[in-house]
Length: 116
Image (cartoon, rainbow, N blue to C red):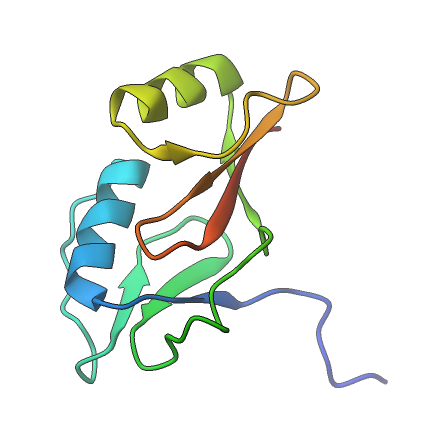
């Protein structure tokens, strides 16, 4: 029996300033930042499914995601794109193949939004 479970528990995102990143990601996801920063460098986003942790201790230019390591789900890719465009997010691509696009967070991490 294999002791490793085929399940992703948490994705860590390297950020420069955990409080600023918390506020940006909470606005992106329509969340209220209701938890405290842990140990001075960690913020656990209240997610459904796989967790996302913002971590300022692991930040370096080399650690920044140059390609998306995961994607955020949406049920309406056009509305998601327009929402982020209105928020003046750093959109890197247009909507591709009718179901996904990329953007960068304020720290330069490449993110993806995908209609599922």
